[in-house]
Image 1 (cartoon, rainbow, N blue to C red):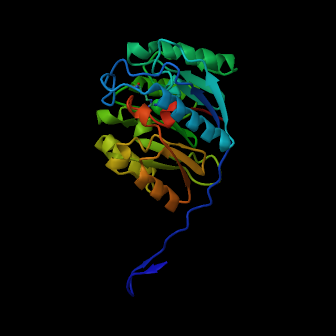
Image 2 (image 1 turned 30 degrees about the vertical axis):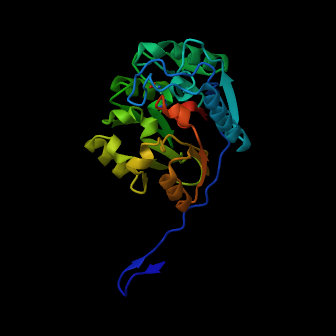
Length: 289
Ligand code: ARG
């Protein structure tokens, strides 16, 4: 408690104890990762990927999950799919049901079937999408609902289709800044609300239309507001287990805010992936229970 003067008393509520829950992730090794086309403002074919650094950075990410006690499955990388390393885009898995991906750009189209077939082989029934959507790039599972992005990649029609497919209510949010072309670079789910603590997110308001900013304010009045600087190092492209938040190491302001809320930030350097507009969360599909 801080006493500012005789009339103003500010209570600093202690953050709830943060509990991690063991997660199940799917990743794809960056064997064929490179920037050979440009489908978002981060990509520049004149700025090539250092394949060896990319491989090491990805290994560190995978080992980070393993050392936190999580399960990491791997999907076979396809030679002609340089963006397949971004496993988040391969579908949406919630409660043992999956909604397949249907990519916006032809360059990535073949990834949809590859991920759906991996999921089917793992015993998860996949609803084949009729509408364009990029999986967990634009669908974030949180509590009983799904936050869904639209504006650049995933269509609004896909939001309705996803709600049916995984049987969860969907909240549609409109992205307006092309640098934040997927929802998972504009919002980080910190606590999914499925444990003892309430759902909690961090987000960058400038990525959203005014109406969607209002929706986020109403739904998450206590959210961490991420600065533009932290958003521009893809700081929100983070993966949380409810206690540890694995995030890009350059997002120092966000890491500090997380610590104040009782989380333990786990910074990793994925700078090679920023050349493609991706980072931690993009490289990670969570198979949500
Ligand atoms: N180069 C990829 C693309 O533009 C990056 C995908 C990042 N994935 C994500 N979940 N945000 O499609």
